[in-house]
Image 1 (cartoon, rainbow, N blue to C red):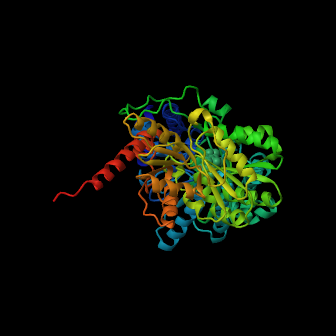
Image 2: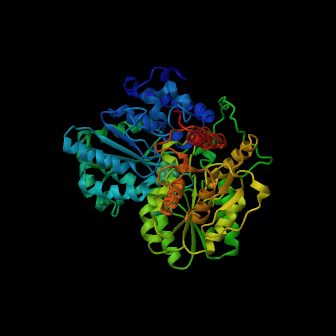
Image 3: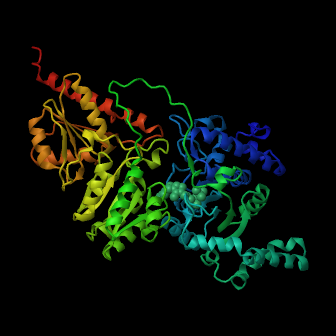
Length: 638
Ligand SMILES: Cc1ncc(C[n+]2csc(CCOP(=O)(O)OP(=O)(O)O)c2C)c(N)n1
């Protein structure tokens, strides 16, 4: 750590530095971020780009008395370093360590536990409105990126903020990048503001001219006149037209200029927008050259020592592709055969594998930006016109488009295929990214067909099936590698609502969904070595569940264990219980899944183990069910 940063643990320490010392401090913060994140993994490029902005904000404002809301919260590393978390910074994104996003349980400086984009203007405006009612005089600053500001929720907040004119400073951190290059008409407009000197110059020229005539003290008057006359100078300025005072663009890496600008802005009230231009990856050549790759970097840490599980999952004999890659391959093949297929992503072409699709079918790929609601509406429109849209959206982000799944797709009975990546435990991204709820929120919609494959060949079959069978489809798969194929990859044809029996035994049945099938299979093979022979069923469908098979199993077996990488509330196991209860059975079922609690960040494998939804946990659950039944069968002591 450098000399200056050694002296800074809090915003109070920061404020003791002279403005001229801030550039060197920023260099030290940037170095700490770089050194740490290359080891721990995390969002690198955006954090390198926002060091000066964050430092200037903490230098000028009085957080947490004033309010700072960071959109997404993935650019909060400098903020964490400056707000008492420097000494724990090397625990970033590790189990028990600092979250990779702002987290309200971590620090009073983090107002929200975040991870979803486009939210900061609504919550910031909410705080500003509340402060107005409460009369506390606290200031509110909301920082949002050039991609996040295009989200529907952000635009809705801008629309209100420009009208109600509460004391809100919106800082637009414009680095021209989402994860991939930003898109949308607004982004082109920001480029115009950045590159067209007329607006930038107009304000200064005007102020200069007034100063020359009336002297230095007239600068504020000049700016005031400027705002009054602005429509004559720059007609059609979007933010001004919407009721904001627009400032900038300013160089987001000139920390002293930022401080000066923010000091002026802090004194003012009303709806203000400061346009700050930054570089994603600033100060680190590899990230500057490839900000997409360095948006998030993988950890480079030794694996923590773990107790050896009883049931060992045999390692794959060959390297396995990710589920994302398996999906992209299958979708490309489907699109090659079926010209109706179009693919939609909401700002995640790389994360969903659609970059591969886009390279082959550019005219059939639609990246709508961080606008999941619109992505689903667009899919509904495309389906209505006869195309076959596949919307590849992370499980957690489709929550944004829930009403559109209901209203624009399911209610219309339009054929859309939702490909839900990152379904289930996600690992170090943690609580806001866990895809724990998609079955619960989609299962309630009439007409939805919910599927999950056990391996890559089945994912391919499911996509084909969804392309031809009637219904609205959602296929879920996790952030993981595809497991090795079971039984040499032999896959029974996919039929509507039909499960696949993989193994038969009389000592209980494990009914597993999607990514849980392979660990269930491994658990069963391990139990065989203890002379416990269970049936293993690959459920394939969470809606409709295979009622006939479930009923027959329940009648023939001493108990069922259901397994899913999803919340136990409203998920696959709940669907099984409902089906059995509806058929008049008293379910003898143990439901394994993610408990009804928000999930901290930790390695995916460790979280699966913690919740007993790995092979070891499944085997233990079977043995416990056997034990409980044996206890119940024993005569009570007299
Ligand atoms: C609702 C939602 N959709 C998608 C994402 C994935 N995501 C995380 S950061 C990001 C890009 C954000 O870009 P921008 O707002 O410009 O901020 P920057 O990363 O450039 O600082 C995206 C798409 C998300 N976090 N939330």
